Image 1 (tube, rainbow, N blue to C red):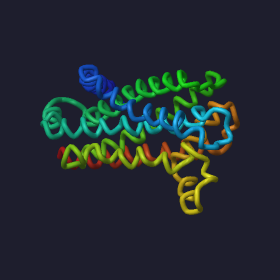
Image 2 (cartoon, rainbow, N blue to C red):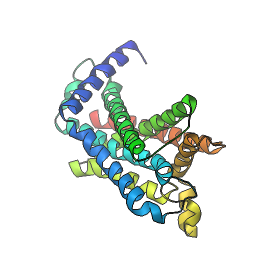
Image 3 (cartoon, helix red, strand yellow):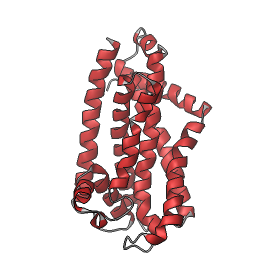
Length: 253
């Protein structure tokens, strides 16, 4: 990536971040749903769910973090759609700005906003009793997985924002992503699920990611699960990026 592209990306990222700072309800709205789910499952349903762990909030948190990201990336497609409809993107094309910087500005903004949301959710989880003996290396591994997952979903959000014809369509794509952790090991062990549902839960990306993060927090061996999680995140990220760039070129050409 050339210095010109990096400079343009930094400027456009700053522009998007300033929009978020002027409208902090974006981040507030993003964290409300996962925090509400965490409160509901820990204090209402937690006593009736047997996960084989001493603390249900410890078991639940990895899945809640993924839901936080899925909620947050919806705003990326929404903001990109508004830029397209408002003619901002077309105006950028008439300036000496690298084409890819327009999309990378939105992607990096999503990454920063989601990191703030994730820190907020972890803070609430600590208040609720979440505890981990994970060392610095484990925390860095968790952060790396979450960053990779955020980038992967954000590029999917970019595709939705470029392809949508209405505001509702631009943000509605996130609903299946938010629902996906419910059919995984995020809330209950997959062993408790009926056959077909269990097969789906054990072979979709969220389960391997959740299990890897949970093992890192619990200081347990992650085994091959972490490589499966990284493969899912990396594959979705690469495919999302390539498709987004193709759609973007067609949209602005």
